[in-house]
Length: 464
Ligand code: TRP
Ligand code: ZN
Image (cartoon, rainbow, N blue to C red):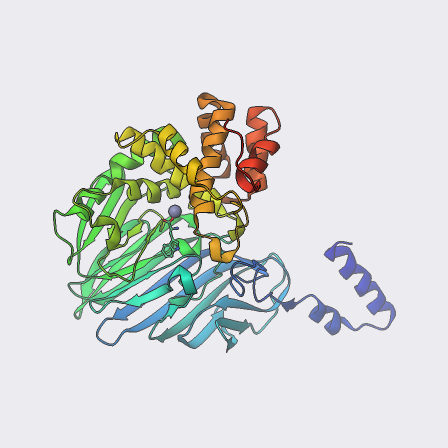
C-alpha cells in the first residue's frame, strides 16, 4: 500500500471514530535513520533526506587550532521526518535552525541529532543552519591511516577516505548523497586556504583573509578537502577553465612535486581523449609536505598529493594520472556503496597503465602480464571487505579485469563503452551490477562469465 492510500484509510477510520487527527499527523513523521547501512562505514550517512547543497563558512586559526563554522545545508525530506541526523565528529554545536526556526539538538557520539519545531513532510525542501566550533580532530580508522582534520602547525589538511568530512562540518557522510558546495574559508592574512572547485576570489579585513570556492557539480563528501597553510599557489586557465595548483612552501619551488603538478592539464587532456570530456568546471592539485599524508586523494577538481610520491628525482606523473582518472571514475561517477570501490580504483590504476604506455615507461600489455603473474586470485575485487578496501585485489586485480574486458570486446567497443558509461552516469552513482549491465548492452552479449572470472573467481582466469 502506498503511503498516500494508507493515510487516507487511517483518516477515514479516525473520522468514523470521532476524529483523532493529531495522532494521525504524528504517524506521518518518524526519526530519520542514524546511518545508511553500509557495512564498510558503520554510522556513516543518514536516512530520510537528500542534500542538494552545502554552504560552508569556516574560520580557522592555526595559533589555537580552533575552527568556527556556519553550515547552511539545503535538503529534501525523502520520508516524513520528526527528527534527522548529520554526521559530525567532535566539535560543539551552538545553535541549529530549520527553515529559520530554532530547532533542538543533541549529540549522540559522532552524530548531531536535530529535532525541528515541526515535522518535515516527505518531499519537503528544507534548510538547516548549524553554528558550531572547536578544535577538530582526525578520525581514527586503523590500518587505513587517519582520515579527517590534521593540524599542521602553519595550518591544516582535511582529507580522507572513506570518511573525513564530518571532522569539519555537519554532513550526510556517504558518497550516495552527492551535493554541490560553496565554501568560504577565513584564515590569517598571508596563508592560503584551498578547497574544491572554481575560485571565487578573496578579500581581507582586520588581518584575516577569506578565500571563496564553489563546486557546482555534485560532489561526494569524502571528496571535499580543506588545505590551509604556506603554499605557492598558481592560478591560470586550462581548456577555458580555471586551473589552480598549490605546492607547500616546504617543498622545492621547482622540485618533482611542482613539476608533476605543472603537467595537470596535459594529463587531463590525455585522459579526456580516452574517457570523454573532463567532467568538472575547474582543474588543479595540491602538493602537501606533511608526512602523515601517506596517500594521494582524488579530491574533486583538486587532488591532494602526499610528499611520498615526489621523493625520486623525476616528477611522478603516474600518480597525477591516477588521481585525475578518478575525476571521471569515482568523482563524476561515484559509488553507491563502498564494497564496489574497484569501480574507482581498478579504472584509476588502468589509467596509470595507459599513461605509462603513452609516457614510454612500459606498455599496457607488459603491465598486465607483470600483474597477472603475481596476483593472488583468492582475494575478490568486488566486496573485498573493509580491511582490504585499498588492497591489490581492488587496485591491481581491478585493473586486470578492465584490461580483460578490453581484450574481450576490442579497443573500439571498449573505449566507446567507457565514454558511454561515463556520459550516462555523469554526476551520479553506480554499482558493479550497473556497470556489467551497461557493458553487456554495449557489447550485445553476456559478459557475466568474464566478469565473474576476473573479479571474483578464486583461480587464475584463462588469458583473454
Ligand atoms: N583513494 C586514494 C587513491 O587511490 C587512496 C587512499 C586510500 C587514501 N585511503 C586514503 C587517500 C585515505 C587519503 C586518505 O588515490
Ligand atoms: Zn585511487
